[in-house]
Image 1 (spheres, one colour):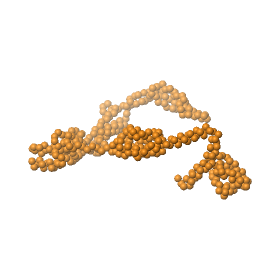
Image 2 (tube, rainbow, N blue to C red):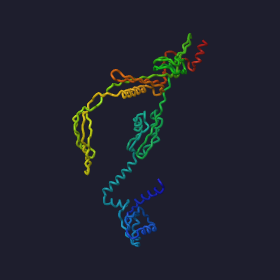
Image 3 (cartoon, helix red, strand yellow):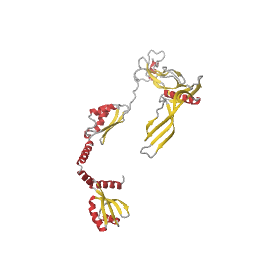
Image 4 (cartoon, rainbow, N blue to C red):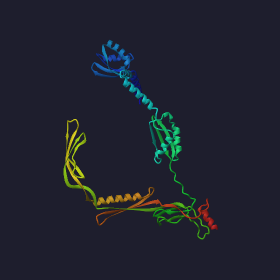
Amino acid sequence: MPKDAGVRLRQSKWNFIKGYVMMRVEGRSPERLLNCMLQAGMRVWSVRRIAQNAITAEIRAGDFARLCVLARDIRCSAHIVERRGMPFLLCRLRTRKTLALCLGLGFLLVLLAQTRVWAIDIKGLYIIPQSVIEDVLERQGIYIGMPRGAVVPLRLGNEIRAHDERIAWAGAHLDGVALSIRVVEAKVIPARPDKSKPADVAAQKDGIIARVTALSGKAAVEEGDAVRSGDTLIRGDITREGAQKRVLVHACGEVMARVYYTAEKTLPATRAAMGRSGSFSEYHALYIAGRPILLHQAPYDAYEIVPDRQTAMKGLVLPVRVVRGSCYELVLRQTPMAREELLAEALFLAELEALWMVEKDARILDKQTQTRQNGDGSVTATVTVCALEEIGVSRVIAGELAPAGQTPGEIQNEIQNE
């Protein structure tokens, strides 16, 4: 806010508290009277000329008596048009005791309401249910209508954070009569795989191997191999042929494969749609102020209304509109569809279904589409999507794990030494 605007706002509030009047000055030279008032130290504002020899202005109530003395010397007349401000408002309320009492009670209620909490706003919850925070508030004695002074925001935030390990941070803030609570949920850290048991890396879906990186264990497939769901990709059994001691490790690594997803969609040559049967009747309706007052009851279960003309009656208190037209019966019938339209829709639905099956973190490499028209007039669209994704999953095997701290290379050397 500009500095002069703030000064004017403070002055207007002070004038309302002390009281001011709106006056009308008439005479040969009202401007001269205004100059004399300013020289005498009186404040004048909202000056407006309403006639050639008449103006209106606002001055403080206490300066009006001094103004009358100056007006007689300059041969101008001044009289009060309206009294404004708190003193005059209180004078009017003096004779209306009931209204004054109600205003006083209302003012006291507003003051009392400002000392209470009337709203609790909780934000930042996505996984944690809101009932968890409500339980903490109930345990801490926080409720709507409680005194604001009984709320300690810092302690409340600490209690909320300590209540649930899924909460990373929590803070409370009093904003007037509202208690605002902000919560930051902790990120869920995925559990580390249990490497205390021997395991293979197996395929969780069919695909063609694109890359194999064995960090522990021995790769069982190569690039270009086709695998089925359940096939072993990286073996955890690294026992040397002819060795007396079986050596098992927890195999791990990355196996990227090209996975193909195929979706097929068939659409019939005709489609059920509502169409006109040929029967129709007259239709008329009356609207007053945009609301229907009289509507024609259609003799059909399903129908379509086509207005032919509308008549608006003007000059009335409320706008009146009369609508006339035709009401056509609609029946369900099989409508033939264009071949191009069917193919486009079938391709769209098949591609949507195929993409829905692709994993979220997979990378799409290729897409192939095929369409054909069947003997009954229907069309079939087939969409095949090729995606590059990780297909390895850990699978526990029976046996004893190799001693802790030994790498696969150290185990191989131990076997050779035997």
